[in-house]
Amino acid sequence: MPGIAELQSIATLEAMASGLPVVAADAVALPHLVEENGYLYQPGDVMALAGHLTRIITDESLRERLGRNSRAMAMAHDHQVSLARFEAIYDEVAR
Image 1 (cartoon, rainbow, N blue to C red):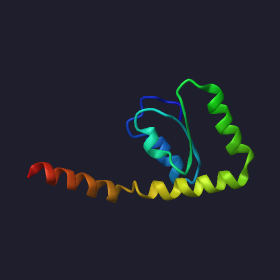
Image 2: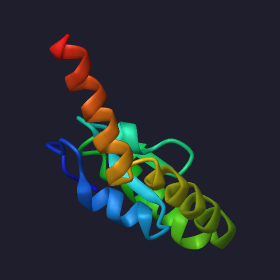
Image 3: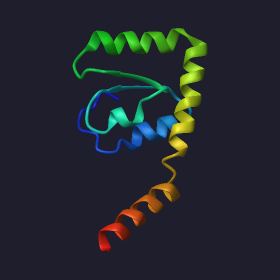
């Protein structure tokens, strides 16, 4: 995900839910979606982006491990979990 204006990045979450590793620009909301499931790179650093992609493409066990971690992280963004989080925030603000 090379974009630097991602506020939630549904496309990244969809890829994660499909069990794919993530390589994303270190910008806005994207760092919150990358932990043990891929790599961040500084926006515009094409060499770092290429290095991360090459590492994932050429290492099957790494790709599988990162993909499993992506899937597990994506499950925490389930719509029911997100809705409950928003309800809790609204409830707290309303008090």
